[in-house]
Length: 148
Ligand code: DHK
Image (cartoon, rainbow, N blue to C red; front, top):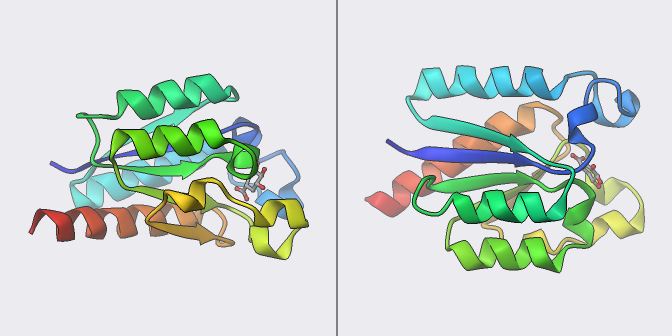
């Protein structure tokens, strides 16, 4: 069975109340439920992780080796700064999709820079919580293509 890790970085635990005009009112628990529903519908496994700490995120990426077939990563602000997270993705040889709730390209210039994009198979941004399902669909299709 295909299994996908959905990993969320700093401040995403505050979704729902954090700048709702930017990130919406859907909580991370709501998103987890959405993803669980998608998993039940598709038969694909989905695991969920969140940390506000760069090293914990790296540990979770390393732990995905041999357990999951792909990673959907909303690295939050670490997207724009973390060479260590980029290296972690490059090191585990798993496909990763960079995800953002907001359209980072319509925001401040510093959000236009992404280290994750350099090692991701693709990027989804600007579709709010629905983006998680779009990313899961895309990752499942990518992994299925690779298996055939
Ligand atoms: C989430 C964050 O925390 C920001 O630092 C990113 C991203 C955008 C999002 O839209 O999900 O710049």
